[in-house]
Amino acid sequence: MSQQIIHVYFVPGLAAGKEIFENIKLPEELFKVHFVEWKIPERKESIENYAQRMASEVKEENAVLIGVSFGGVMVQEMSAFLNLRKLIVISSVKSKHELPVRMILARKTLAYKLVPTKMILSADDLSKFAIGKKTKKRLQLYQQFLSVRNENYLDWAIENMTCWNREQADEQVIHIHGDKDFVFPIDKIKNCIVIEGGTHIMILNRFKWFNKNLPKIILDEPL
Image 1 (cartoon, rainbow, N blue to C red):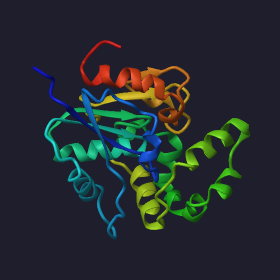
Image 2: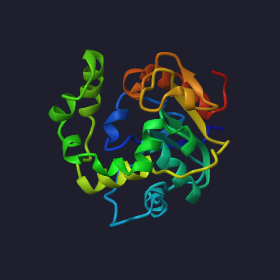
Image 3: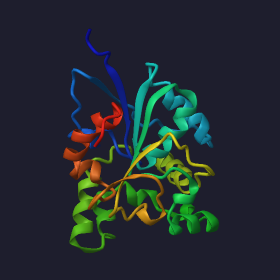
Image 4: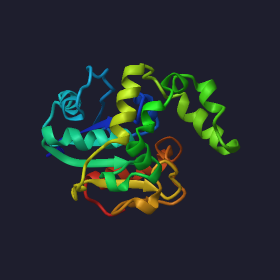
């Protein structure tokens, strides 16, 4: 008797498109891969309402939902409307207590409202703010995958990432995190699978690890 195909849905990072998963390859005899792409938010839309709209893209029961960075936040919100087999977050956070200090300060001072989203829309302008050659190279690598360049979306996403108010982490969430993630430093991250040398964009440059281990994680096999 052949094994039933497991449907796996990926949600990319903030402003990114499905292209960030282009090197992720799961065995086709076991998994069917889908991508949930960002929608343009309605005016003053709550993250709960937005998550419900995103969740409507998941058509199967007992699917696996995987989110990267802000996509990790989103899949946790989406899970309230779905019956999932597995919920996996990569380079993300599981509650407001795992957010870095700078985001907490930005929330308290409303500094996130001052982020010039037009600058984010320009890879050339944003690269000027890189610190060092490695940072600039990583930024340029990620920038080429930024496909959602709508200002309303960016304003909404930055606010909802900074102001995410989840108090309690869901113990069922499987969290994969790099120990060199400077966006969400690992010293504030609890209960995760640690990738040594993994950065915030490890979905791009450590894809071999994910190709080897995501099937094991989904199937409850030892790493």
